[in-house]
Image 1 (cartoon, one colour):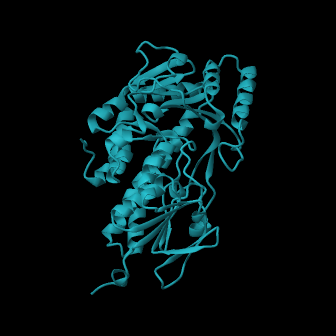
Image 2 (image 1 turned 135 degrees about the horizontal axis):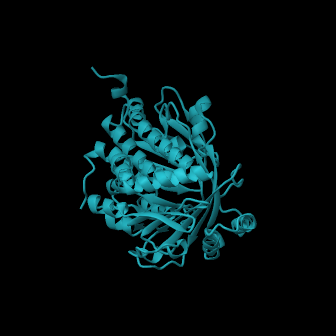
Image 3 (image 1 turned 120 degrees about the vertical axis):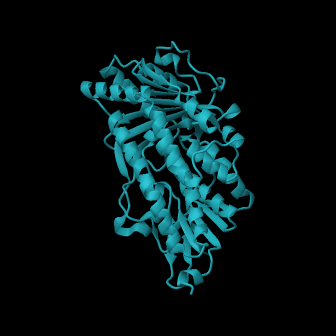
Length: 444
């Protein structure tokens, strides 16, 4: 005897809202499983100059491999990281080669990449078959009872029907409040904002590491194979992004800010972000003449063009009791946006796309409710751990009192020396996803 769900028509047509990393991941995954997929993106075009840098760890790369993007294709848009260096002001605290050891063990490196390069790579198969529609803003969704269809309304007034709608439209999702109703709350501001820059004229050799006896921050900056993390008094993070002729130096300067920058677009008017950061640096120099990181930040700013500067607040999302309703589901930042402190935002988005496609296939592309419930059951605990871990690390990094700074430095240096970073990467970041997909094994 068959159930009503088994008797229902199979999913054939899927609409994905948002052409970010999560949306492109699920769209490619579903196309590979034979479904008709249309992606609606509100931006008029995919601009590779927009967006921040991101990290790709082995779990995310495993997802990209499953989507048909080879190891060589990933290396074409990213730079493998070999070292992680912690500094306090101008002083090197500790260096670890755990990123290099992860590469040796799993044949997939920790890499720095630019969001634009990753999006371009993932969008290419969809553009080839005209499945990606830019300049199309979704303003409403409606599921009519008894039809097994969802109607999507665009800003133009046009409507389109699908068997399933996937909301992958980011932390400021249009679909989330329509779907979650009273369970929806605004993104949670962390109290920190970021000045972000990309230096284009960066042509260091890809394996360049600072000499082992390097002691000063200024001598660490231009080395693409290392993550440079300055803990205090200024929060500064440097890593390479892109590869080959596309290699860039990505820098992020974080600071406490009671209210996030108020603008619709990160970049703002030409020169606005440069002016904001310059004013901030000039003011801080007057009040703290001992901070040795300011000359480094000034040099980074001077080398960065206006078009490559961003200023934005750091937000996350609280845990939600569900991510779907009927035949519509949220994934990626629309469901579980995280702070950047464990470098897993893009990787969680990639995992979501793969797992959602698998859940639908496991239920024969018919029992939508069971498939979406299974997706939530598989993903909510893992993503919650990542979100909570990132918040905890952010809290630790925010130490400001002398005792707090001493304890933070002691904990992080001890964790790196005792190889906690390596163990966390293996057990949680890599193993937490791969264990359920044939094990965290090497790929040749």
